[in-house]
Length: 328
Ligand SMILES: Cc1cc2nc3c(=O)[nH]c(=O)nc-3n(C[C@H](O)[C@H](O)[C@H](O)COP(=O)(O)OP(=O)(O)OC[C@H]3O[C@@H](n4cnc5c(N)ncnc54)[C@H](O)[C@@H]3O)c2cc1C
Image 1 (cartoon, protein in one colour):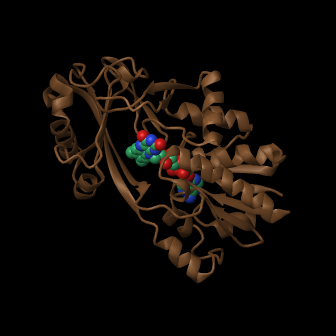
Image 2 (cartoon, rainbow, N blue to C red):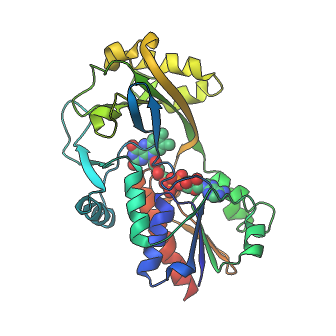
């Protein structure tokens, strides 16, 4: 068996790790990712500016570990120093569940898992037409971890889609966008709790906000470095607005948390990231979907087992298990 894994996010890496547990060697696993690094939406970015080096987690901010299989992984990553506890809740009263973060950034868990699996992804390698790719480099199985609309698009014209009923149901999986504004302020924010973050779920008082973090207080940046995730609804509404408008809106929305750091005249640098596929509106009821025999194709990722890092991890493993079972 040789398996092509598309995507070096947590789902793809979990699949690779699981295939290795099933006895596949590194020469039987080919992993590609269109990005320059591993981690996918567990993303981090550096910005060098006059204050020093600002570092941001600009996708996922933290993860929880509720299932035993993910908890075991997190424990091992904590032991190796790749992951550390951030806080036990974002509200006034901690709820007791650890929220984990990468020790030096969220990509740390992905890098650590890549190392454990022993795979070397081909980075900057984008697959647009899966049929053409497999004609050039055949695989007995494919695990596709891109957001579902993107995954289906790579199979649209080459006869690799599943039977029409399943294809139709998969095509119904929709995603919500998130606009993320990254800001280096001259002044540290003064309204965030000591661990440096505030979470907002459908917050009627702050409808524009989803999450605000100071990556310096979080422990990954030398200088104040704000990540402001706008809410899905506001992101949808403002999607086509220029970056300068998004900066203004984000600073205004988070002003009560930022204090002097919300002053637009004292911003040192900023960037905007638009996540078109930030998370699924609703999840598929199974952790993976499988079809075909030559090749076997499995979809995996956060749309299949919960719209979070942990769900994506579990889905990647489930896809690897399903492929091994089908191949036996
Ligand atoms: C703004 C934001 C905030 C979030 N906050 C949290 C949070 O706080 N906690 C939490 O648990 N989760 C959070 N999430 C969700 C979490 O990031 C995801 O659930 C998880 O990272 C998804 O992993 P994945 O492997 O399924 O997909 P991804 O991480 O998206 O990985 C898919 C990979 O496939 C690659 N790819 C796609 N198409 C192709 C192609 N055609 N060819 C080659 N490569 C391709 C991509 O480059 C990507 O690296 C957040 C997500 C976003 C966007």
